[in-house]
Amino acid sequence: MYLNATLRQLIAERLGRFDQRSLSAPDSRRAAVALALVEEGTGAMLPGIDAPTTWSRSAAVLLTRRSELLRHHPGQWALPGGSIDDNESPERAALRELHEEVGLSLEESAILGRLDDFVTRSGFAITPVVVWAGEARELEPSACEVASIHRIPVSEFMRADAPLLDSIEDSEQPVLRMPVGRTWIAAPTAAFMYQFREVCIAGRATRVAHFEQPIFARQ
Image 1: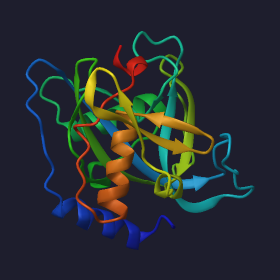
Image 2 (image 1 turned 45 degrees about the vertical axis):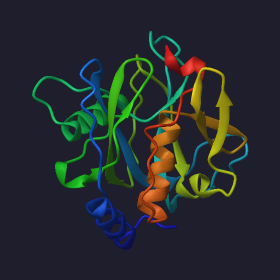
Image 3 (image 1 turned 90 degrees about the vertical axis):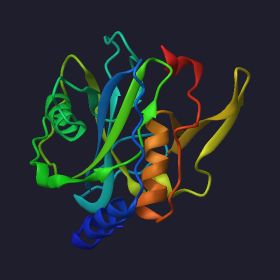
Image 4 (image 1 turned 180 degrees about the vertical axis):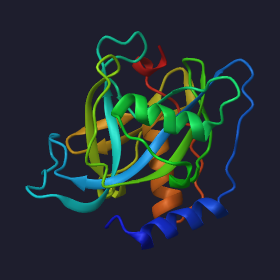
């Protein structure tokens, strides 16, 4: 799957038809994340994923490993994102966080649409914003927030063994995980990736806000 004009149009059209659900969540802090589509480039060295030896135009998603120095969710997989400032839209917040966390500056024309809000156990109501980032060759991780930046091929999220659903004692809903290489990503990030796969690539209107998070992701 290549990052080209055809893919961009397809995703924009599917997001345009998608009945995106926003949640009021008055007791939660508003936040936004950027699901940025980029070229795979030279890849990310992850267990079970072969990195291309030359620059690849295959479609990928930018993911980060959060710094171990952060107070909340240190070391976890994440999409670039953070709290929404006063009078700021989720779209503007997502673009701002992309610049602050990975050094990627995009115009509002890069925005393709939104996926469903997700309320976390840690007190955030998160709006995922899908953006088109192109080559994104010059990335720079924020020293205080990001340990590493990874370009995960979209094909990884289309695997037949995804998603992984695990029962949990304190909820009737399962925990959702998405396998990547020989590791995995937990909800809420995994929920955003699964809904992106279903809505934007497979063309299926799938909801994810009901899925649970593992215990370690609730702090």
